[in-house]
Each structure stands twice: as C-alpha cells, then as structure tokens.
Image (cartoon, rainbow, N blue to C red; front, side, top):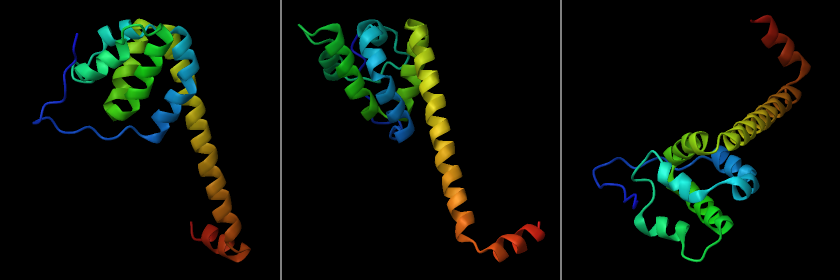
Length: 140
C-alpha cells in the first residue's frame, strides 16, 4: 500500500506544532508497547501521508514491531499538522485504548500551557505598581 507523495498542485501542510510533537513524545512508550504499526499504516486515512520510501522504512524487513513503531513515530512529526490529526483518527479506529492515552496527554499539555499562561499573567501583574493596578481596575 504505497501511500505516495504529495502532488505538486496540492498546498503544503503547515508544520506540526510543538504541542502535538510533545504529545507524541509523551505517548511514545505506550505506542511502542502496544501499537501495531502495519495495521496503522493500512488504515491511515490520508493516502498521501507517507512516501513509498518512508513506508518501506517503517515496515523494514527484519525489523521488530517495536522498531517499526519507532520508525513511524520518528517520521510522523515531519509530516505536518494534518499528519497528527490523521494519526489520531487512525489510532482511534485501530487501537481505541491508545486514543485514551493521546487524549490524556492532550489534557496534560493543555494544563501545562494554561499554567504557563497563568504564570506569565501573574508576572505581568507583579511588575505593575500597586497604583497602576488600582487605576486600571477602576476604569473597567
């Protein structure tokens, strides 16, 4: 099932964002332990996600299932933002228990992002003088 390459007339996908890369890294051990990479490749929704060369690297003759998983997870982040969504949909179909792992990782990532934003906000508030905070609050 060579999935081909992206056609020249198709718009290029955006790079995968750091949040999704972090989620994949955080779930890597679970994927390597439980994922069947050949099944995932067969069920991938996007027929142009992996080139024939990439697919051969993932399937690799003589590779263990774990090595195949590692190869898939090494290539996936370089495939762009749509690749994360496609992979997540495929995991939901092929390995529902791993979808739960992804969802939990997404929640952890969102909580971390929220905490970072709260810390930034608190830092900005501390930098304002007490008079500035009072004046701004009374203008609201």
